[in-house]
Each structure stands twice: as C-alpha cells, then as structure tokens.
Length: 259
Image 1 (cartoon, rainbow, N blue to C red):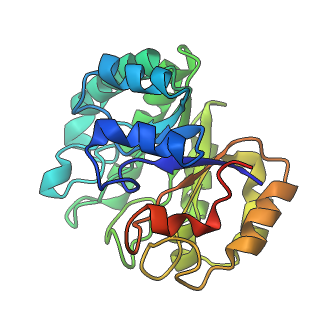
Image 2: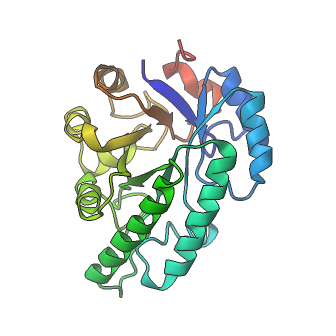
C-alpha cells in the first residue's frame, strides 16, 4: 500500500492540536501534515514529532488572513513583500521540523485584478520561493484546488494550470501537489491523469467526493486508486485530508494501520 500520512487539521480534531500527534501514531500513521503550523511554537511541534517518531510530511506557506477568507496571497501584486516574509517564516519552521516539502496556495483572484497581472505576480513569487527553498533542500509544491465547490475564484484550479506555471517558472524545484478530491471535481479520470502527471507529482492528498469525507462515503473507488498509486513509480506520501463523517477512529476502516 502507499505511504499514508494523516492531515492533523482535519483528522483527530476530537482533541487539541498537540494531542493529535499521539493519536495519529497510535492509529498507525508514520507521517503527518496540517494546513499551517504558525500558531504554535516550532519547538513544541518538533517535540511531538520526536516523541512519537513521526515524519513531518508537508505544510503550507502562510496564506494571508485565513479566518477572514483569504486562501493564499501568491497571485496578489500588492502582497509581494508579505509573501516573501512568509517564505522566510516557512523556512524557519521547516528547519525546526525537518520538513523537506511545503505547499504554496496561489490564492483567490480578485474580480477586478487582470488575469495577466495575477499570473505574472504568481510566476515571480513562485520563482522566488522555489529558489529560496531549494537553497535549504526544501521542495516547493503547487496545488490545484477546485473552484466549483470549495474555493470559487481560486487561481490555480486545474492540474493543467499548475503544469503551465511549472513550465514558465525556471526551476527544477517545483512540483505538483495532486489532490484527488479537488481533481475529481474539476477533471475526473483520476488514475489515468495521475499516470500522465506522475513526473511532476510531488505529493498526493485525498478525500472522497461529494462531501470531502473518508473513502467509501462517495463516488471514488479508492481500492482501485490506491492500488494504481502503489503500482506507479511514486515514492512520496499519500495524505488523508478529509473531514470524518463521524469521529476519526470510525472513519479509518479504509486504513490498515501501515501494514
């Protein structure tokens, strides 16, 4: 089976954040991710990782004001300095957590912002982040997020747009973060798409659709998908980034605990 990781922003939310590391390890996970670590001291998170022998798989660059609805600032021309400061903060946390891969959220394009201006800003910011992170031995991922259900106006909403961005950015340090849930909504044909995109994929996440719950609650045949991933030349992590339909423990029937 693939190497599964648990997203602690969505799983084990029955307990406080710092208690979720132990819950993930007890469930059999060896890797964890979450949306953002910045609300907690990096040293505290590092202690939990070490105490439970967990690998920090990935987290996101600062997204702007998440609680106010912002979903990344990389495409916003008036936020470039803030974006660059966020890269510095990301590097500090990645060093402390021994995290070798991070994700950049492109953001929501304002309706009055010209497409070309947003694109040029995104290219420049991604180039800057990729170069800074490469010097630290950290890979930069870019995620396509569906604009139909979860994030209307999200600037990178298809894998094709991410690949176009990767092609334009002059760096070997940029990869595609492929989320099965988002791409089932936007594109479908998941297995064949992953096979075609495999040379660019740096990280995989999943949830079922509709509902963004655990495997078996929607339309995706995860037995086939996981078997296909297992048969690909992919050595990265596959992260459970779903909202349990009840409690987390009850949602883990799909998972064999790492065996």
